[in-house]
Image (cartoon, rainbow, N blue to C red; front, side, top):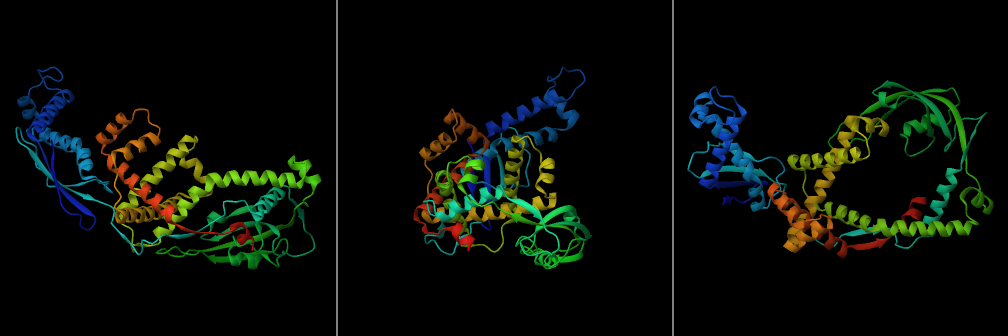
Length: 433
């Protein structure tokens, strides 16, 4: 049985001293010699039959003992993680390892990097805004407007310049730092908030065949340098968008309802179902986001952010693979470069890391504990057929601390949501204003 002693956590690092019993050491050395005998050919001996003195003479005893030492440490690391109940942010840093010796206990020291234990500025109930559970008239109106927009038509404009809300077809030629924006036949909405202000200034008042040079500077993220771009814009066409009038005849012919009222009733039912499934998760998300704003941490630990980044990346690639796609095929379809994708993923990782640390802080404050029943329930919720076998597999891999960590955070979220102070806001009506 392992003997493990651990230091107090300091600067998000924990140092553990581990002693492996002599019997386990001897078994690892025996196995290392057996594996070496099978791996290499030794003259005069059949594969796997070369004795230890012959192997030592040919390869040197240190080589096989080094292998035995590495195997010992690797085989016992899951037990160390389980015993310490930690989820390191990167691989352990093993200090000045000696070689394992026959018939002797083996002792080594390892330093683990952990996520920072940040604090919160307050543990008071979070305050959030949420859409009402009931369907509002503005939400129904918004859906009706969306349906009408699907039937909108575009009419060419002649004899006048571009006005706000016109749909303008333009050719964009890169001049400086704007290769990603170059395009032919792109349609822009004049005056739209999605355009840089400089674009709107150039478009409104322009005529067909006018050529404008537009320069704008992106808003820089914190710690990043703002980028400036210049493109040459050629106005190719101007259109206005005509939305059909809502009538019983249109509703019947285009949407299959007997009347406007019947369509609105159907839309209401659809929104009710959507809210019933979506709002609980949305409330949870907003509560956690509000809690993360209280995190007292100026700069995220790089190792922890990187570990979250890698996990998010692996999950994203797995989801793409399940859809029969690769990152190389997804990026062009999404209009992103690899650099933009990685930057967005790092930002998302930072947000997730901050939320996780905030929940950890709340769990510590609440002194949340994880019972064996909690763990069993977690595996049952995951739908595993054999809970005990799955638990044994997680223990063997050193992944049980991550399960306990996830349960603690889930309990913290439950407390957060249950005690949140919620103000209902009709966000659709607010956005329309």
